[in-house]
Length: 196
Image (tube, rainbow, N blue to C red):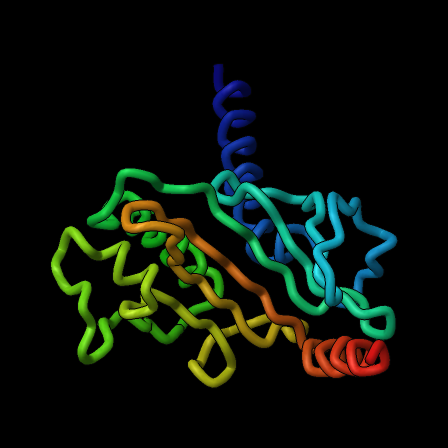
């Protein structure tokens, strides 16, 4: 019996550790990874690809990377599942808060952007998601060196954001920006200019 309890406790520790690795490693994708080393589902264009993430999280349905030939992967994005019939935003906010807490535990201080713009038309509580859809409301958490976060050397910024596609359907978007992102963006911009 004691051996079973020890095994169960060890399993729980491993599972909890594995759950945080998804955030720490940007879904198992490292800065500078060559796109040829990832399983690409589709090429979206302008250096953006939908990929199969080596490590997944139950909140997110698809994973995108930005990559240039000269830099490798410079950004990883997780696209969350849809929360429909949620005009008040209660369900998507509950999931956002859980992710926010997990990221805060891992990376520390962050900037909380939670406001509705002056002059917004969609102000009522049952229009919460619609205000997001119309860019009148912002719900985002930002981890960066500027906000006092404790980030790995290869990650410069993490953005956790609620986005919406209709008046009552929203999803969660997470983006990891790597330290090579400026060089990557410059390379992609040059490639675009060269095509002219």
